[in-house]
Image (tube, rainbow, N blue to C red; front, side):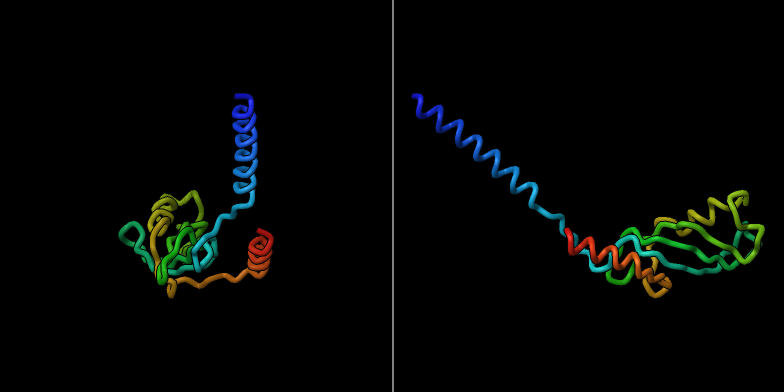
Amino acid sequence: MLIIIICSVVSFILGFGVSNLVRTNSKTVTNSKTPAGRRGLHSTKLTVGGKAEVDVLYEIREIDSTTNKSKIKVESYSCSRSSFNGKESIYYKDIINLKDNSWIDHSEIEWIDNTSENRSRKIDQILN
């Protein structure tokens, strides 16, 4: 009887130790070929308020991607007419919401290459 209790305790301790070892050595692997979080510029023409046509340049961040499209988050924008720029414009939220969380072709985005971000990402991949 004593041997069974001792064997149970030893197997519990060994099982617990091995499971912790496996958990701490596991890595998260992402299968994305294009890293989410890339920054870029997207330009378009909009008709604002049903009367004014303006050129809008969006600064965007990629939050998801497929082989030919990116889902974007609008960081900021700049219009060709100064009256539509800034948070005080009555159309500010409308201009942001028009493209925010939408899917856009890769060909319509001018990607900003930031070598320091690329270097940091590569170092993180090597270390992790």
